[in-house]
Amino acid sequence: MLRLKNRLLPLLRAASPLPAPIHPRPCCLLSTSTSPAPFSLEDYLVASCGLAPAQAREVSKKAFLDLSRESNKEEISRSRLFSASNPDAIITLLAGAGLSRADIAAAVSANPLLLRASVKNIALRILALRDRVGLSTPQIARLLLVGPDALRRSDVVPKLEFFISFYGSFEQVLVALKRNIRLLNSSLERLIKPNIALLRQWGVRDIAQLCSNNPWVLTFNLERLKECLLRAEEIGVPPTSRMFRHVVATLACNSKEKVAAKFEFFKMTLGCSESEVSTAVSKMPAILGFSDKILLRKIKFLVNEAAMEPQNIVERPVLLAYSLEKRLVPRHYVMKVLQEKGLLNSNKEFVTITTLGEKTFKSKFIDCHKDSVPGLADAYAAAHAGVVPSRV
Image (tube, rainbow, N blue to C red):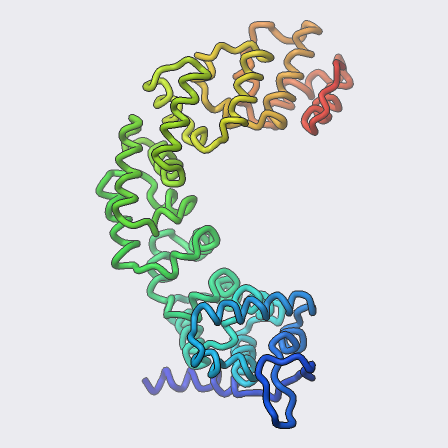
């Protein structure tokens, strides 16, 4: 305890209140009959945090809106936001911990109620992030930018230790937090760990990857996650398949009714059976999330322009995941030009050309024909930009 106190004292001493470095405007947050001008958070954010006046105005509004949601009238009247004392101490504390002025401004803008946090609690948590978790000053700054509210509300160290172990690195934890900050506010024992245990029990592969790309899966209640797993199995994808996690992630953000409607859409437009749609979804789960309007445009193009049979589209659902304007149309244009000039076998399948990586496609179908079809590269670029030439 003595050792902790000795490590904490320099931070707390550095965070002792400073004179308010502002000249408040007549507009105030707390009326008073005494001569000293009332404290203005908006002015304070400009003078002490370096925010532009317009930004300070918005951040100030956000601060008091958030405060009204969190506190009752009595707590608001005693809020540490009604003087410069606590904000000064927090800013000095963060600066003493190594955060730059820009970092502090960004953290305060993201969560202005950080300025009313307990100085002692924040100091303890910063020390713990350094000593227990082993974070560097830049890493602490990045964490503050992503989750300042979590640091203000609770001790995030146990959760960070767990997530670093689970994801494999602090960098991967930041990726997940940017996608779902609720990870730091959710219970490890009641929610996070039971969900991971359920995924393992189900035999799901690459759980950390699933929960990195789709971290909100970890904050589902257990029954909802179990329902997603069951629905994925019903489609016919085994939990041991590498595609299973993608199917689960897609089903998790699409209701059962929406998925059923999408199945009916594919059956009607492509004339396929329920089992064929299931197979297509197991290959490319993302097609469940596309709108009917976008899918219909792609299907019409593939059938009418690229002369593909609906059955071939069902067997190669990746085609429906490609952009119509950026991939399907430009590459079909290049294919037709080369075929008309006798430079490409007319039996060459459009799907083969479409699924190539961009670099490989340009090398095989554009660069090697720069002498025989000199305008092809420019025509492809124009088509890629949405302007399809009549012909080169």
